[in-house]
Image (cartoon, rainbow, N blue to C red):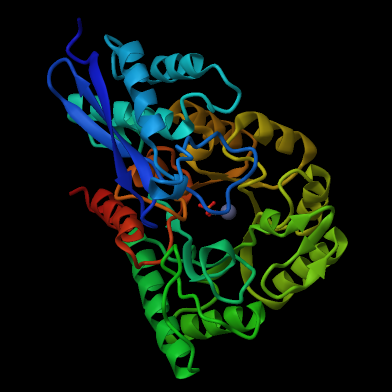
Length: 410
Ligand code: PGA
Ligand code: ZN
């Protein structure tokens, strides 16, 4: 038995940032080294995501308990005994085989991913390496640009705004710590601006403000004003949006649940054209529905120069990404490890994206945890971008603080 072999895997039902149960797994190696990892959970989930196993017992946590997933971890523990923790591909292959389903519905992607990530972290600890070094190797590192969601709408807030995310992207600023500083200063300026206009400054699930506003244009104008007041310009800081439009889509029409407006695909395409010509928007995520590859391809060739990010479209799934690449749909992929359920498959999706010159953006979920794995993943893969919320709520800020430590080498 090698010292780095897995001795056992255990798991605990913990809470995510919305207070819903989630899985924390602990991998212990033969030499006594151990590490934990916990998994996040989405609200505006794509239908093609790997299955998140929940108990469904309404008497416990309204059905959201994860005790079945904990049982899965016990099964996994037996299967992984004696496997070297640094054999990530093998570990993930064994778990996928044990599950045997298309979408990890038997053991649950929440159980599988927690073990997959904890194994990688245990291996990094075993070798005495920072996680980003273990995952990324000896190459020069580059820190990602944060895409900070400073105003929340859609399924992440109970305000009247249908667009899910209004982000700022300080891509024209050099150092990560200075990018973060700009984000924080703009966030604070936005808070003052909202108060000055008599709006509420309570926050949504990802830490962005969540006021009722006239419409999305007012939201954008308030953010642009905040950028100006904080002393930055549009070359340094631009805008990005996650429309999360699959949430609106029903029988070929986009029906906005809060405002009651409705759009055909063509109308929505022209709406985006107008929006990017009126405002400094660099990136739009999920502008169209998750299965409409043809319209995505049309939009991608129309909105030249804009980053079009497939989140629900690709669900971190290499097969769906390849289909998109073939069709010319989108030019970037959002990477959420729990959409696919193993670290190896997540790395595959990133590799495939890079190869096709698609941008990869590493992302949190709206229900997140006190685990900073994605910060290390962003650095290790040189992804260039990370989406991890506003500089508010510790489950978001902890990723930024981890990146500050990596940047400083501390
Ligand atoms: P989710 O939102 O975690 O609720 O899916 C994040 C996103 O859509 O990017
Ligand atoms: Zn999204």
